[in-house]
Amino acid sequence: MKVNLNHRLNEPCNKEVEILSIGTELLLGNIVNTNAQWISEELSSLGVNHFRQSTIGDNSNRISKVIKEISLRSSLLITTGGLGPTPDDLTTEAIAKSFNTPLFERKYLWAEIKKKLSDSSSILETSSLKKQCFFPKDAQIINNPRGTAPGMIWEPKKGFTILTFPGVPSEMKAMWKETAVDYIQKNFSDGYIFFSNTLKFSGIGESTVSEKIYNLLKLKNPTIAPYANLGEVKLRITARAKNEFEAKNLIKPIKDELQKEFSKYIFGEDDDNLSSILIKELIKRKESFGFAESCTGGLLSSTITKVSGSSKVFKGSIISYSNELKQSLLNIPEHLIKKYGAVSEKIAENMAINAREKLNTDWSIAISGIAGPNGGSKDKPVGLVYISIAGPNDHITNIKKIFSSTRNRIEIQRLSVNVCLNSLRLILLSNSN
Image (tube, rainbow, N blue to C red; front, side, top):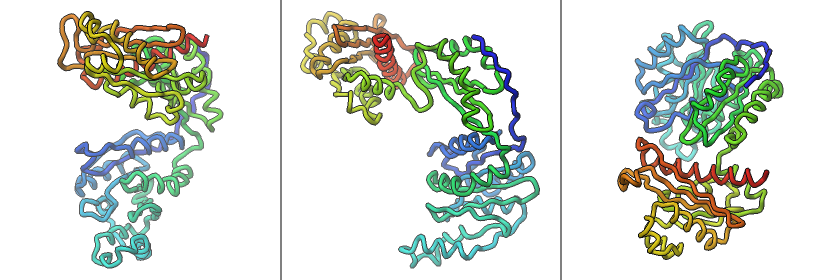
């Protein structure tokens, strides 16, 4: 694959930026740290590279120690968490402690808190909520339009600034957009932005993709980063430019080459998923589909119905987990089940044909398999899955997959769903040519 790019790489601003997430619940894994991910994306959109993310528990001494260390190597620190009224909300005090700075009450903030919580006025004077009003003397307050805990912009020493935000995502995002964006653009951005476009692949492994684009992975601007989810490979193409239009122009020749090389495997971009792409295609064709599920137990249907607009093309599913329901709901003869076994190409094919008739759809997908960890045999191991797709003009496609024995039950079910959706996508793609 050859792409000639002679763009000059504009190096990003060399001011180092870090994100510090504060909260013992993050360390224990009680909640997922979505704040750091969101802030990272926001910084990229502002053209600001950050080089490190840290997480620390609710311990004042440890927080102070970490902040001192960060102040020696970075220009900007963004913190989330620990700004509330409870005893374990220690961020502001710990930051002040790091620089031997006293805290002073901002009385107008107390008035604002009382106004926000007017229904609880009888307990406010003795409440720990008042601790949210104390900041270093020269700190700029970041208003919190959705909660009671303000943040701050504070430069405790020359060349080092701290921005603090609460851990509640909705509050943090509102404060960021209202205050932080303008501040960071003016003080930490050189006018360039990072813009990313992600291509999504199915039916091909990450190593295969990486081998085919080895030379592209060496590019400096745009850069290409491959990464994989279960049953899916992504290529993130990121350009650094003065604006989005210029960035897209840098990305376009890369995308064009990738589309040529992997046309069969690329199913979408950015927020697309196999379900949304399949639904759009069926809507365009004015066709419907339905399922007959066994080993996935409704997961295939659930994956489809998560997408808005699925009701326009999806009629329903017959979950025939037991052999008895395969017989009574899908009219699979008992002698066929005894002869071939429930997990077999013959049974999957009959499930698909009969489900299409029962649900009165243009297309149907049937799936039967052994998701494990029990139930496997030498002839039919755990991970064996049969998929059958029935369609117009007596179309039948049968697929046999044997997923690795290292996969657990949930992974086998999810991978099976991906194969179902991608297989129908490819059938529709070939029929449209």
